[in-house]
Image (cartoon, rainbow over all chains, first blue to last red; front, side, top):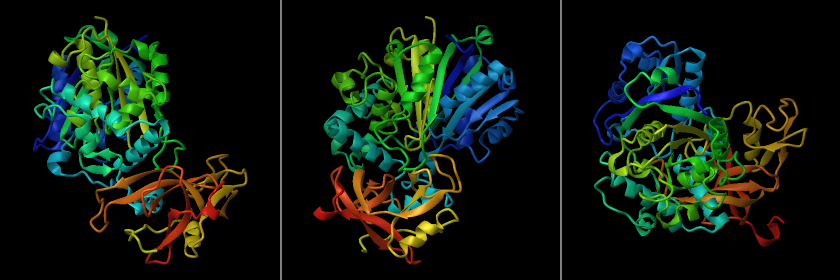
Length: 382
Length: 137
């Protein structure tokens, strides 16, 4: 099935430690993605972005001198961009926009803006009932989820570390990856790294880098006249589960299961049809829980699924083929780069890290503290 | 109990004032609805039935079990000593609280409420290992 909407352009901004401004990086991402699509700013009438300012899409429209007929500034952490694909597809089908750019950029590494404790507005309940206990946000939530998961299913930290080990293997094949030249790592390296919030060490946690990306969407009909092979939006789904550390009864059960089920149903596929998987790996546990939610295995089976190098280059389940947030790039809200890589894999643009014959890809974003979950299924006829 | 010094805790509002007032007497309460639903933190609406007019605070036993925890090794603010234990504990009454524990527990351990007094007279509930006669069944 198809939604009748396609991604026709995709690009990264400069990544890593850039010394550039957020709007400068946004400009790189958007203009490069439009150039990839063979379109210009004059063609754009829809903007979806977040993390720019309080008025994110408004700010970006002003920056580019555009008066959009449709915008979306939904703040849903790293999953916002997969949600934007759904909204953009709906807007394009409904005729409210014809060419939508979804983008994000951050200079958090250069600007040193990341805070270990996160940001709690003084008027939310978490500021009264949670922040006084000094949890790291989001690391302590993921730490508690990992602790609960390993306890419940009897896994080891070394097994979970495979997420980071496999990510590094992919990064070695990606010249843009922050850790491209950093060499292989072992599970022992991961568990032996300095502890952040147990059982997660610094090597279980994503990078803190600058970076950004953009994708351009239009109708499939128009896409057929553009320069690149259209990548069809086949399905999407989302779940929003909580903001508090204490709302969810069981930290080992992520909302990803619902978002994926909806996306697969719209696309008319199952997990078995997916050739390449790009999931949010803010932490090793995030990716493990997402794989279960996405139906690649049952609850409690992710550590067996990823064993024996199955998600490494050449493995049966190619996962996070850039090197992921763990070894490639993590600008704070990483979800747009999941889409960029899924598109590139489906077009066959990925050089040494290309998954041969990839026809169906999943991009799955996670925001906050396993708070928001959004799945996009993309496909291409090769 | 003075084993950690909390940072500034924001003032209560009309939804949470009564809960915080109980902490001044070291009483732990749980918001309970006429429908039987229990929830934390206290709020203006019952997430079980949607009513806004049947919520009251009921005294909790103080007994809980460790749902999960993490040992934090990096300080989110300058004057907090590491490492320390942050945990989710499930009250015998049902709701889950975020809290501190004095030492690394095991998941499932029985714990009981204790208090860290705040400079403004309120107190933060923290949890310590339960004595055998206090263990929840």
